[in-house]
Length: 313
Image (cartoon, rainbow, N blue to C red):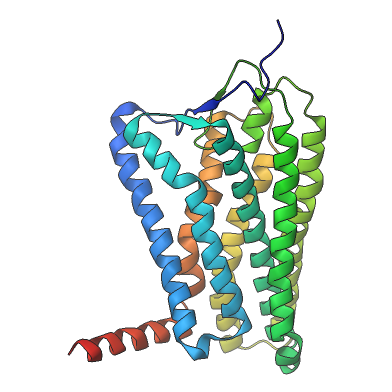
């Protein structure tokens, strides 16, 4: 018998998180709280940057785009997961699954490029402070964001087109909480070597190279600080770069371990945990890491709250 292809499959079933039925309510409340924190925290960042003219700098320009990307990144998977947990209906249409795969890859890659742009901004600010305003011009910042959108879109489109041409067997159960590219490839009856090659090549450009650049840039920042060591300078560098670097390692470590260096005994449960770390946890942490611990952002928040208090009194 001829295997069913993608045109005859109208939907997939998402198994969701590997949790027991009696724990569904608690995990639903947990992920709902995490999602609301992600959305509200990143919306607050965008609002503060837009309203406070003191935050109209390259660093906060990239941060506002990162905040929008984090909201979108979480919104690709978490609302659908919450709906499935609440309704106990695990189905997703074929078109919805392909679309979810596209937007997930797009925002994941865009997140990577924006984090890299922020690392470049910090590198120029610390290593070349006298030339910072000249190098980090408005046109360069706009170009970096535009190029990030174009490359991320191209990578996502490549993976999605290759996925759409695969033939799927009668097995249509996805052991994940979203249409993960790796899980989808395992369901296919077709030859997926071209898809795997695309993951390696596009992943090299969108994930591995930005990650290596970030590590190198922070190495240069550390070397610059140690050349003229001072307690104040070291403390400032640790406060601005330490937390950022920890989130970078968490984000990239989960992606690289999941898609590029998977151990032979990896289970679907471990894959889901890794996906939760970089697609749910990291976007939630970013408002705290990049902004709410930042003196300028705290000042902008106090200014906004004082205006609201004066206007209401």
